[in-house]
Length: 425
Image (tube, rainbow, N blue to C red):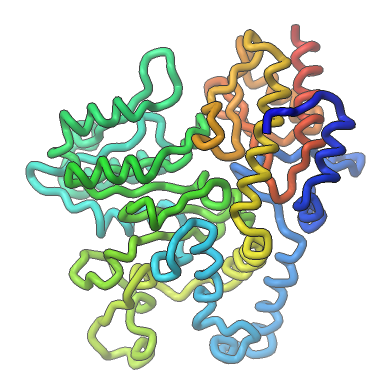
């Protein structure tokens, strides 16, 4: 869609035509001191709370109050199999088969558990490849894995870097790295949508390249789950991890998720850390049986899960299931394209979008580099009623989320940004 127009009336007209616009009413929108809705464009950091979340959590609080321990079997949604209530909807969101996904732990914990299984260094092949500007937690995690196995965390890390004067990564450079170092690399672990630039990588291309050179391949989909078409099963990736508190609106610090490709589902010899929740459900409570791993992603669980967090995830997933990820992606492309259209009016000498122009190579986030600006511009934008996101050294991240953001939100953001820039000039 490229026939965008200027003016607030156009934005309001698009909102009237939008078949998903009524979902905005199903979220709590933060307000300013005067009670007006803030322009919330920060779903890439923390998604807004669905109004249904309280009802879902209250149901579990009531069952706990009324049933105590019997809630494990007798609650309206019994706690013992509660994680299973999330599986099918999660699989749809990330493009996987139900046997390939599980909701558990938090993101970096899951990343470590995946590396226990899929980072198997040898004397010759022990290096890990990540993008040079990976999210810090990913970088710290892979460095600690290198140290854990007795390797130098700088010498053992290979960085896929952008070319000088560029922000985005090129696949030719990755191919060149693999040509030169492929036989030294045990694991490729890439942030599926880069947190800083918003670049969405071609999972299938990277996976095929990695596998061709004998590497295992995994992705951190924190900025991808609920945002882009991950298509994890067809990508062939060995594993992926994600959080649910960004685009999946499950609340601060909520549980994460894991994908393990089904070709690993029945491999009982695959090294892993285990706990009683990865043990056969039928004999789990007999306590004294030898360990018998559950097939599929469930076999990576450790402990019984926190039900209150899962209730919040279920509230959000029910909405995702109702709408469908493809409809959300369709609207996301229109919204983000509209944002890009309006930003171009501010002039390339003022605002530079470092996120890829190709909609297939990005989600809803646009990273704006503001020429000759510092964090004071972001602070003034916040004062003007826009909740966005600043990342050092000079980027404002804007994410119009299709479930609750509107064309009017996007119009008002750019209008306020324009006024802030005029005041500073």
